[in-house]
Length: 124
Image 1: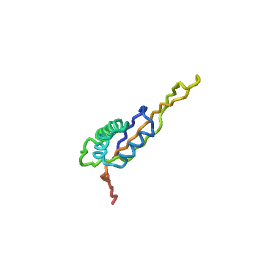
Image 2: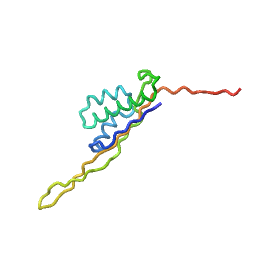
Image 3: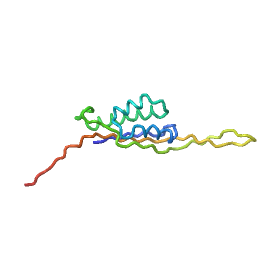
């Protein structure tokens, strides 16, 4: 019982976003939201919105289950590099230095800690 949410082309470097992602990896959803709400780093707000989206996706997928009873946690979260925008910055003696404005893609998988009920068929 899991749900996935993806956020693409976030205009922050992947290195900065991975620092925030490492803080919430494996945490319960309620604790992760508390961490992200008060975290001053740049990527915290994007990951917080994405985590709320993943919880909403889980809720839409499992209409009959309650979020409180499901005990959701962040199963996996990873940050991949996206497209880089190339810019030139003026340098001495008429030269130009290249600036890379990096972006990233974030993927969160939220799962419930309770195991789904197994249906056993007895052919007796």
